Length: 160
Image (cartoon, rainbow, N blue to C red; front, side, top):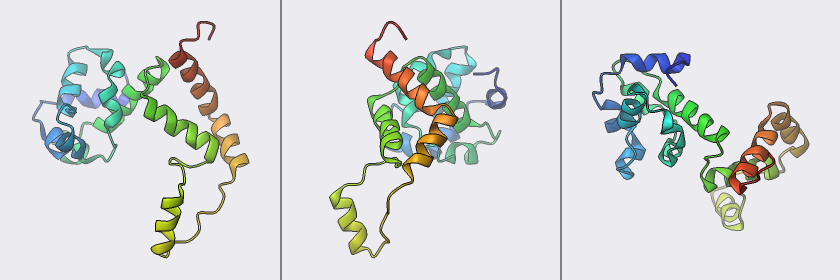
């Protein structure tokens, strides 16, 4: 990860811990520790890409905002997720979300309770997403084929 432009910013990290103290995920999930992720990368542990915890990052960028060295922590964790993705190490919830985007054009499925709440709040109808355009765009950028590849690795297919 250090060989990427975002990763190079990590060389300025002096492990002050402000990233972790500013992180809303770390407040709730105490095993989620951005400072520790960065330390592992600095020490050459590239297996952070295999850790399921990195998927808990919300990419809210609070860690970067509070970092005195402006280390691009969210971008580094995104790179770790991409490496995990390519290795087929993706949490089931992330795969489900990707499937929902490809199948429904939304990151979360629309449920009757959600629609009822929206109606009570006076929010407009969600309408129907332009699925042909969404699927074409996702196919053009390679998301559909990557999802299929990850799903095959996840299932343990040998021929992929």
